[in-house]
Image 1: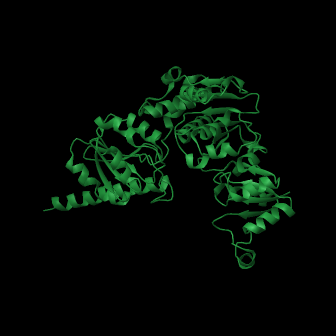
Image 2: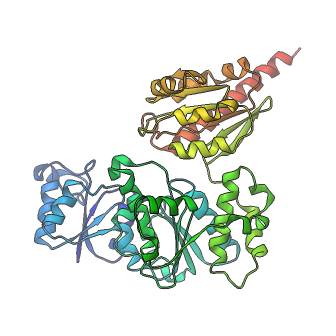
Image 3: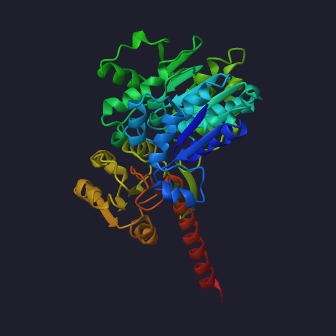
Amino acid sequence: MKYLILGAGLSGRSLAHYLKDQKKIFYFYDDRLSPKNKEIHQTNTHKEFLSYEMSQEFLLTEKATLLLSPGVPSFHPLIVFAEKEKVTLLSELDFSLTKIKAPIIAVTGTNGKSTVVSMIYHILKSLKYKTALLGNIGIPASSVLGKSDIYDFLVLEVSSYQLEQLLENPFYRSVFLNFAEDHIERHGSLKNYFLAKYKIFETTNKENKSFCSQSVLEQAQNFGLNTNHLPSPLKVFNSKNFEAFIPKKLHSPKHNLENATIALEVCASFLVSLPLSKIGETLETFKTIPHRFETFATRRGVSFIDDSKATNMHATLSALASLEKKTLLLLGGLSKGESFKQIASFKEKLPKIVSFGKASATIKKELGGEILVFSFNSLREAIENLFQQLDEDKSLQCVLLSPACSSFDEFQNFSERGTYFQTSIKSLLAEEEKENGDKRKP
């Protein structure tokens, strides 16, 4: 069998590593890296990359399988060509799932999935189970191929992109946390986005148990889906039964407690021989994932929170709901087309908003009549003026970066944006401390 890998990002490279170990013949096609024609290819240093025309020829003449990276949409020309020519297509996740034997706990949702899978992974690892954390969190499922037999459990964060491509679903536990508008540019409509995530329940594993929130169940019914026809009945989360077993440090903010109770409930469903108290106490040593409501500094009683991972409105609203303090909200980046007007429902705790990036003008237009909005062209420019904003309003107790937008107008990803925010604030605090120290010198 020969393979063409579509997309040379993290997932594609992981597939290539495995295929190379298995001594399989494979090539890449990537819009950004492939040569434009055969002539260029002959002198290109990246011999493993084919041009578009050569990719088509390779698929047909070699009867090769097209392996898909999750970031590549279904309307990509090479996928359309492959479907027309009846070429075998497999996603990176499907290719991996056919070879993985360990039970898989799979989690999806618009927000919170990285935190929940990290908590589940932490619980299992603390209880001495051999486990790995895979998927959308940044470690491709194919990275464990060839060694998956050593694991007791695998924990998998799955995005709508991955689920949309999925053909086979052998998940041991399926979890759908929540649902809100996002990724419409990829899926075309809110319903298509929901249906992609809903595929997490269409399992082929008879031991599967499926979990979801009440809001997800209601959304399924609103879209006319018959939840009674699923392979495994949907179990709605029952957080009240588990809160008493969650360490106090995770009771605030509210969404952290919700995530912890879900992780505990899911683990308790298969670790049946262990008391809830023993499973729950493992979370005492859990550390918040980077850039998800991460408090990292203080200045004159004002705390700084990095929630750069909040790339949609639902995530930002959840962050605001968790705060009781007067807050300066840093909001902006590259808009996903959502309305910012919902932010106004928190105006009592938002004396001012600092907007930045491509979405800045829209934010001011939609919220300026309700809340004082200061606009800047970039996050860099906004941070340069941040301490002045704080000094002008002594009521502020918190600075929250929770952008409700993607980062791509200014940064490579939300992680780079969050790191820049933290580094810049810490640098400004150090400079301020040095200046104050110099003033105190006789």
